[in-house]
Image 1 (cartoon, rainbow, N blue to C red):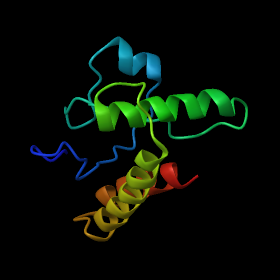
Image 2 (tube, rainbow, N blue to C red):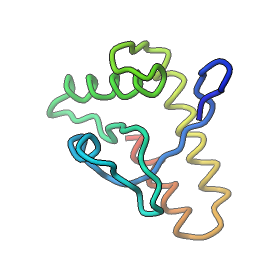
Image 3 (spheres, rainbow, N blue to C red):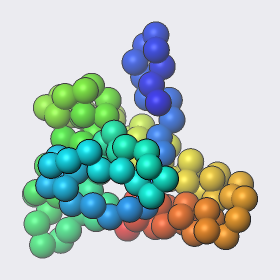
Length: 113
């Protein structure tokens, strides 16, 4: 979520569902609980195509922070990833059941790779 006054990113939420960029762009993809995805982030920065992976990650972060894909700044990554990792851990420890805990652990592991 973003602060209504400043536009700063306040919270992030990870949904550990693997979807391709083309699937995300091609249709309104929903998660298991029926909520529509608002943003897409590559979960693995591939050693086979590191330039493409970084390009996609930068565009995704720029889109999250500015609404457009071309205004990436390294400070976005420094703000986003620690926030995402810490939120995933907090959600893991506060999980109501095993399924929710596993979901949050997956989020953490996907982003920690």
